[in-house]
Image 1 (cartoon, rainbow, N blue to C red):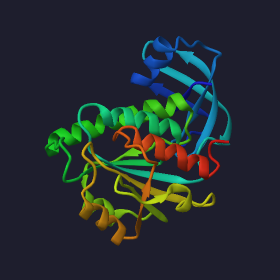
Image 2 (image 1 turned 180 degrees about the vertical axis):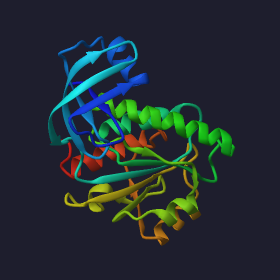
Image 3 (image 1 turned 135 degrees about the vertical axis):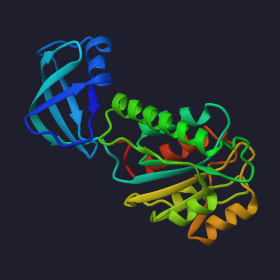
Length: 240
């Protein structure tokens, strides 16, 4: 069923308005009597029946509640060096579909794109909208958060994952040696178009991280997070 997200836990009835109501009525062309799933953004799905559709609102009755079964057992955070153009939008869309928990854009020394605070804030709003749309389309149990742009030093300081991995073209351990199938949280650091500088890799490693490789080929900055996340989902048995 089509899935939508709200930011509260409903009881017997849900009233949708604005963009969500228009999406149901005009884009999806749903009608009274159709069913859809509403998620409370906290892992619970609510099976709902459309009771009424007006010009501005959609009224739903809650038929049942169940825990979402679509969330991975391993929470993967991506710290992505801020790329040029619309590459981050593609990264967000694909990684949300694959099961990422959170994405934080990071400024590294070789980043070409360096937006000012106002521009970065505006982009973050758009990024979170992309994450919402991808979560709805893929049937996620949560909407992964896209954080504000941080410096690499700030990102490393706040990172509390059990395993921290930096992917580095200068070499490192195979991913399977660093991630066990029972692990509950992993952070991955992806460099910009020009790659990480050695001292940046050293910073991550000195704070509990480990350097890893994704093989002998050099992957683009928008390819590496998708490949790494897919591999981690496979290792942790979240693609079965």
